[in-house]
Length: 364
View 1 (cartoon, helix red, strand yellow):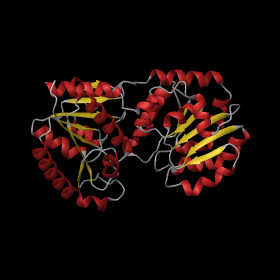
View 2 (cartoon, rainbow, N blue to C red; view 1 turned 90 degrees about the vertical axis):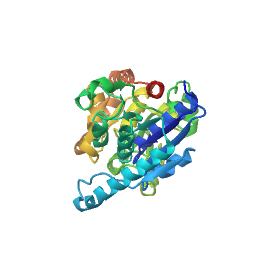
View 3 (cartoon, rainbow, N blue to C red; view 1 turned 180 degrees about the horizontal axis):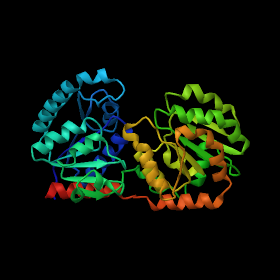
């Protein structure tokens, strides 16, 4: 096996593309201690901050996606694309990667296009049950496609697909035995059930409004609430800390203890969140964001719900929240069934399996 390799990872725009890339890089570092890593992202997106914080170098491309709502903003897209292809070419020519890995997002398009054109080994990791346009366009050019769901043959060449799952945080792979630690960390009472609400690092307006509307009802049901508002909304909703058993957080740093503490979870349906929740194995109500490309969060959630492994509540159906939650709260058999079935969908070795595919390509 080659010891000194040059590896480019490209993906970003959201945490759902950034954190899998970091997990893959960290695992590759174990395989190749002397490897040189370079990330390529979109220069005005969050990866330009998060990747250096994790200890890796990154270069930014001037790239963004097609705007569906604001058509005039697309006028600059051809110029951005030409600029990004040109810069990606220079980056790859200078860095001389042995492999280029894409985890989705706008920057991965030009980067993997150039790499495949130069006959460099390429791999994409598709997190969602419904692929984004970038990965659909790249599918015929890349060498291998790692996926997390069945049925992706509709979009990708079947001979390139390997079902690996999505990378998740290592501390979530073993949360048993952390019950007492989680209760102390969140100062929880043992005689009450705990509901955890996760709306992403920035937060979700619809989820926050839903919990605000129902918070008194939840308290009346003897429920303790760990409510991640997101940093955009924390100042607006932190006043509910005054209620008995309610705590708001802009961000939850210890997700292992958060999931351990939960009896029930309300979550968006991003691919990374679903992969984590499958490993955790708790009853979940998914409220997908309708504001994402191709409505892929709803499709992600349905892939779980159709296995009788979670409950789906669309934003257009939020008036049914109390009915749905009370049915879950009062039905122990349903809680056990959902927890058991969602855990069956877990792919805890995803990061290692993806890296094995990368190693095969490097050694080919």
